[in-house]
Image (cartoon, rainbow, N blue to C red; front, side, top):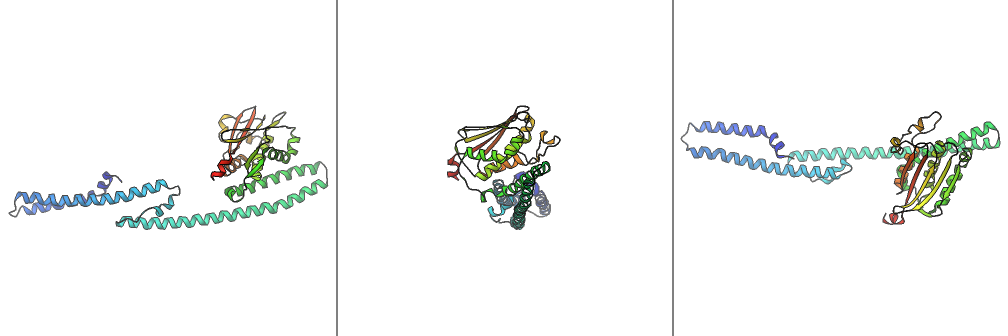
Length: 337
């Protein structure tokens, strides 16, 4: 709270007191009162006014500066009422009541929104569980009736199954901490499981697979890590070129253990590379005819990596391929947690 603004707000009061002093001085001219008394009277009045304004400015500035400091320190601004002391003047008490009422209302709204979000997540999980049953039944029918039509139907069912998995993981991505178990996993086994899960499409696209230096232990949740790897492999298949290849290589560093997944696909332009982890961003490659890109896969990968304490980054060159690097944290990271 600045003194200049405070005095500006009190100009009417200062002018009114000054006018009153002038009126008193004019009245005193009709009485036999010495000059020193006429000088002393306005000096006393102005001194009392200055002292009153100074005290009022001090307590107001102390209160509002404390309020602003508490507000700046808070991430959730609506909780500021819990950190401030009740003011001693009327305006502060009124503001305190307003902040309490608005904070209470906001807390109730946040609680209601969280409840609705939780109910929606539970519904989506139930929906995914229910939809997988007819998908599995349809796949069984297709497998028991081999033929070109059944093969095409089986492929489309695989796509639907993958999409439902994305829905499930997206719904659970807000509360990963409630559904994960960090343990030591063999990185080569994780990579192998993801390759096998996508073998049909890798074989169909004639991919060559290289796995290097991956026989190493990492700390992660195998279920969530497999989902991340599947998304990366799916993107490599989706944006592959002629004679496609996919290379998995691991290395140890200061950050932890890095797993690089590189392909020789169409690549990503420099102006789009920084946005590939944004929600809904598909880029120029995702706008090509026949592309099934939704811009959700890599967004989920980054979000899940953040929840699991893992790092993820990308490098690419148009026409030469893309490399996605996942950094598994050191054991000390979880020890500190």
